[in-house]
Amino acid sequence: MRRAIITGGQSGLGAASAERLRADGIEVITFDVSASADFHVDVTDSASVHEAVIAVGPVDILVNSAGIVGPNQPLWDVDPEDWRRTFDVNVHGTYAVTRAVVPGMMERGWGRIVNIASMAGKDGNPNLSAYSASKAAIIGLTKSLGKELAKTGVLVNAIAPAVIDTPMNATTSPDVLAHITSLIPMGRVGRPAEVAALIAWLTSDQCSFSTGAVYDISGGRASY
Image (cartoon, rainbow, N blue to C red; front, top):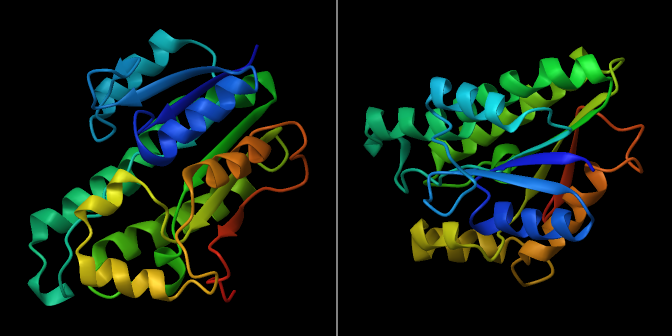
């Protein structure tokens, strides 16, 4: 049985992914700041990440889903600490967990990593500069790491959702949420299970010739 770590696995896209992968027969371990997670892990704490990964043992699949929206303000009003916190969770957390599991995947010659980016990382969402910039960084990280691991059997891809019906949107201001929802040609927000289905494919043997790619799941919003 393959083993997966899902960060942010207790809510939103992480929880939906955990449910789907378990249904597919994969052993899922959740990392989350929630007390109900399999491992209470703050992805911004590299020591905590390292200890948890060692405790889990060999990992075949990693879904980096831990993330925050960050400040809903024009760039010039964003507090530097809020900016740093957004990058600490969304980017540095992804780096820390990925760095901890990749050597083992390389050694075993098989692995699948899926990073949760966002349409905001491609288009930029107004009044979400920190979030948009952090998700653009995830896209760049994915493309670079995919090339670094291309001949190892470890595939690294990202998904770029538009607005999905998750608890994260509770922290997004109504006007921002209304604007980014209006950009979706299908006229609706996405469902977590729809995203989880894409993740299930990207973490399977069926995905064998794709790495360093960004998969849009946006109801038609994506333009490139």
